[in-house]
Image 1 (tube, one colour):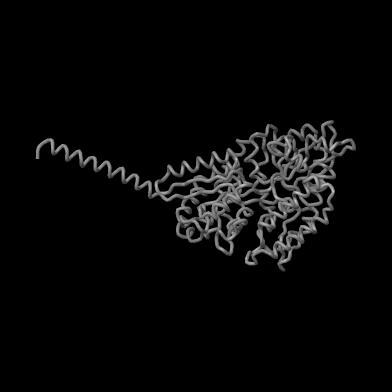
Image 2: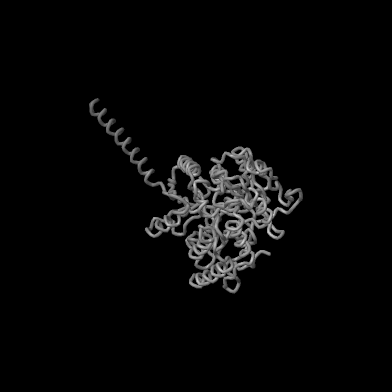
Length: 469
């Protein structure tokens, strides 16, 4: 064999080796399991949150070479339900959905995978969480979720607006009295209404306690139920099921009371913005963040969306109703869809979202961690982001006042029922609301819900406990 032939053979071997390596690399890439993560059914669609989610995806994909995580973010929370329904109908079922609360998940009842087999196989530690949180996700279908984010209900208040009015801040501790007109009074919804009226101002500087106040020229409001459902609003007066033990819809009398309190606040005392004001330029980008609302009753997740608020603000305990605090709370997690083709790989991703990525995501979502080992760090991050807030120590204790059953608990024909509740909220807040008979409309809501429930799937297991006393 001459020198030329030998060089040719060596060159050919080298070329084959390079091609084989390239082919191997391409093959390895082709063999990656693709896991899709759908975001939007709960929180997760604001710009800051999307940035954090994309960073998590990038970090995960760089951390290993067996799974490629792809993210699909809905255009908005309002569009997410239809988007996910379309994906499912077209056979493009995402593997992981979340973060999602119970209301969002209930809209797709029966489509969530039982995680227990993967929990057992991987020896995932569920004992790190309180049993009460784990039991939230124990359904007839199995373990459909693992605790991730909890959001206690709170009062957010604009300290600058209180200072301008010379009014004392809401209590800093649960159970403390409130100083009003020189007296110590209970921090309850009657007190909130009185304070909110003084903090509702028209363009002439008159507050809502004045005979000269013009509600058509309001420039500042005292209170709002921020970004929540009417079931959540009504649950501030007591937790209650939609369906009773006998399968009948008998809405709580406490809910009727809250509906009247809400209507009075919107149309009689004018300290709550109606739909026209809520959608106006005055309250952009949204009510409390506009700096034109003194108090908002909302969950802890609202810290996600206050970076544009220029005012000093803080948090306070939820008010009581008839001596008892009822603080509707949210709980979000990530779920795997039952029809996922890559369930085991999806559970690997799920562990990452609940593990290494958890603190970054929890911070972006404004969430309080279900994992005890992350709670101090989460509060520290919030304190650094919002230095005006001093009362972070009320966050964990407020969870003890979460209402049961929850305001997102399921019942037969849940989707249609929730739409009927939404119609009731639209009626109260809309222009037609000022002339309604609340009792009459509440009775109609109840009878309509009974008809909706009767058309639903009787296999849906709904909470049947009595209303919270």
